[in-house]
Image 1 (cartoon, rainbow, N blue to C red):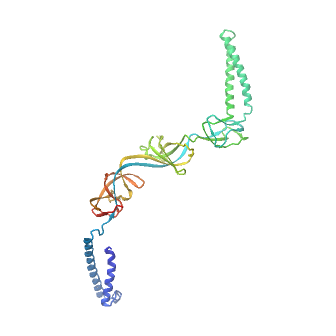
Image 2 (cartoon, rainbow, N blue to C red):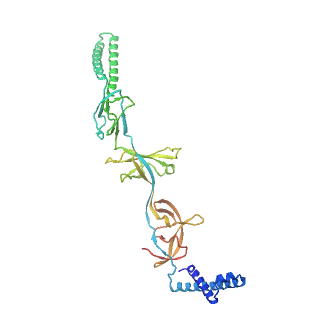
Image 3 (cartoon, one colour):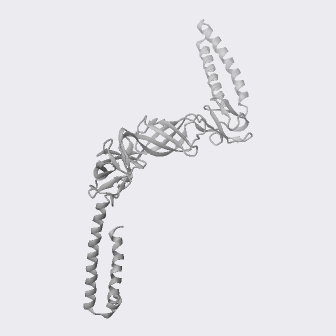
Amino acid sequence: MKTKFYIPIIIFTVILSSCGDKNKSIDDIIASNDITEIRKKKLELETNLQEIDTEIKQLEEKIKELDPQHKIPLVTTFKTQEQVFKHYVELQGNVSTNQNVVINAEFSGVLTKIYVKEGQRVTKGQLLAKIDDGGLSMQLSQLQIQTDLAKTTFERQERLWKQKIGSELQYLQAKANYEAQLQATKQLKEQVAKTSVRAPFTGIIDDIITDEGTLVSPGQSALFRIVNLKDMYIETDVPELYITSITTGKNVKVEFPILNKVIDTKVRQAGSFINPANRTFKIQVPITNKDNLIKPNLTAKLKINDYTNEKAILIPLSIISENAEGEQYVYTITDKNGDHAKVERVIITPGKTQGDHIEILSGLSSNMEIINEGARSVKKGQEVKILNL
């Protein structure tokens, strides 16, 4: 037990003893208003207290002499060792795909037939739906007949012209008529083709937006949403602080918390433009989606490996202290003898942190023994007992 716990008890004992001897309590002496008696009693108590304090110190010295482990702090230690240290920048982003498209009508008319179902996989160019062409198919058939006739006439006039038969005017007129018919047929075919709604790429019909029998209009009527879940990526903003460390090819761990899924990938593209509004640049990270569980706009956490040290010294953050000059330090041990040693203070230069540990750039080397538990309660030069569990 420390001295400060003894003193109040001893003082109280002395007071009681004094009162017993003279049958006069402190209250009685104070109540007497006799300044001489009060001073005498105070001096008596102070003298007794000094004598008791001296005796307590003598006893403590003897206890320390007889018990060498008395008041020696107990600490735990660990040895430093070189290890691979990977620092990660943690960001958040959403899944995107360039092939997530709403297909709109390109022709005015009634949506007469839908050939697919929601969730169905389709290939590029596959017919999805048909819009009533309002008689354009019949017009195209008639125009095709006229075009074929114009072609026959032109070819005949061309043969005659090559044989120097007929006039050049007849040949040119036949040629012009045929070319005009070809152009008209081409334009009408393009119009008729717009009545057939086809898949722009291979993917899945995510949503059928318009029902059969609905009157649709170009640019106003959305018909389908088609999504390709294979070519997907995450795009996110990165603070300009990392413009030299987060570059194309850097390793990335992508975590999808809701799916309990982690994917290893790399930075596919790092932007060259700093957004002046938020001082960030964009990066793009591709992701694989073999089981089709990852969907557009799904939230993801990105851990980007921006720094690696193959021979790093790592220590817990909790054992680092700072002096009045702003220097950071840890306590090591020296003069080790069995489980006893002395405390040594070492100034360190910290580096990057990751979780509860920090990289040490200077001050420590491999195989040094560092005080862990008890590091906040020891002093330089103090003797300690090492208790490694």
